[in-house]
Length: 334
Image (cartoon, rainbow, N blue to C red):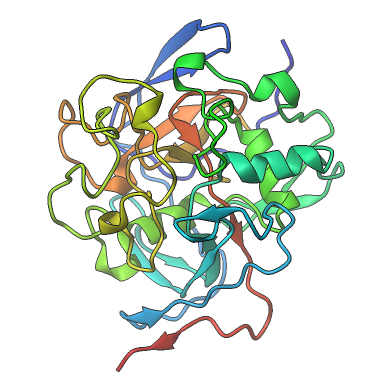
C-alpha cells in the first residue's frame, strides 16, 4: 500500500460522529467509524485580510472564459458547467474558532461534472508538477503537489455500477467516486484549486448570515436538496437519485451556488491530501447526508474525514479560484 504523507491536519473539529464508507469498483465496501473530539477547539487563522463588514446583498460576477475543462456545448441548466460566481470577503461564525475571516474568491456554481473530468482526461489527464503550489489551507499555508501523489486514470474513474455517474453517459451529472488527488488535479487543470474548508463553509452558510442551510433556515425538503435517495421522487436508492447538477434551484446559496447541501459531499483543501482529508455538504444517499434519520444540523456541520484515496458514491468536488489583483468582485444592491 502506498504511503501518503500528512502535510497538514484539518483545522475544524465538530461534535459529530460519522461512519465513512469507501466503495470500490468491484462493489466491496469498507466502513470506518470516525470519532470527532467534541471538546476540540482549533483556531482558524486569517488566510487573507478581509473587511469586517461585507455587504449583505451582492450582484455576482461570472467569469469562466478560457477554462479548458469546458467546451461551448457543455451546458448545465442552460449555461456553462464552468460558471463561476464571485464570493465577497467577510466573516462567518464557527462554534470553536469564533468569528472566521475569509478573503474574496470565486467558486464554481456547480459541482464538478462528469463532462469536465472527461475534458481533463481528453487532455491527457495532466497533473501538477512536483512542488507546484496547488492551493492553500484555511490557515493560508501553501499546499504543494507531492511527487508521490497520483490521480485516477481510465478504469480507476469507474465506480460501483449501481451509482456510477461516470458510466451514465450524461456529462451534466456530478462526478462521484473521485478521490482528493484527482479532484485537486482537475481543479488545477481548470485554472483553480480546491476551496479551503473555511471558504466552503463560508459559502454554504452565506457568510455573516450564518444560515443553517445554503437557502436559509427553512426546513430541508426534496425541492431544496437531493438527499435520502429522493432524487427521483421515491425512497429506493439508485443511480436515478443523482440528477444533473443545479437541479434544485430553490436550494441555491446566498451567492447563487447550487447543491451545497445534498447531492455530493465535496472535497476541501484542508489536510492537503493527508489521512484526515475533509469533504462537506451531505450526500444524495444516507451516510452523513441531509437525512431524516439524522438530527438536523447546519450544512457546515455535515462532514466526512477520509483518506485522500477514498472514493465514494457520495463524494465529489467543486473548484475555487483566486481573484486577480484589482478584480471587481461584486456590486452592492441599494
